[in-house]
Image 1 (cartoon, rainbow, N blue to C red):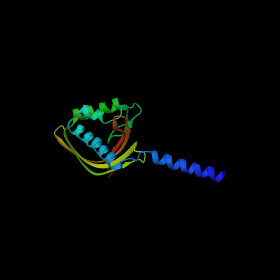
Image 2: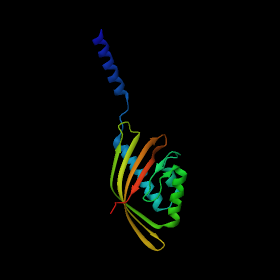
Image 3: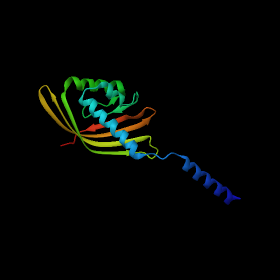
Length: 155
């Protein structure tokens, strides 16, 4: 009796696992690349509408820019970007070494990349090598950035 139960349990688990939809990692990776590209485009073009379309509207969101304190919540993040738009001009971001990893269930992803960030501040050129880490979550509306951390190499 015990072996029949175990056989039945094994069969049920096999059926359940077969019924779960396989995640199309390539399609999800492409969708995530689009979000990250839109983020860059929104920063370069000071397009706040596009910027807000790609970040989660979560009050508990915490992000880290290259400088300053942690940025808590989307309202604070928008203020930081608006301040950047006021202070900097001619922003150009060259993105390199993009690596995207999607969770097995297709609901969470993390990505890393390197930026060559250039801009002008008070007629002075700025050139920053920026390391970026991104966390994205798939929601009903698609992939959204739920966290990022940017830093510059020390030394």
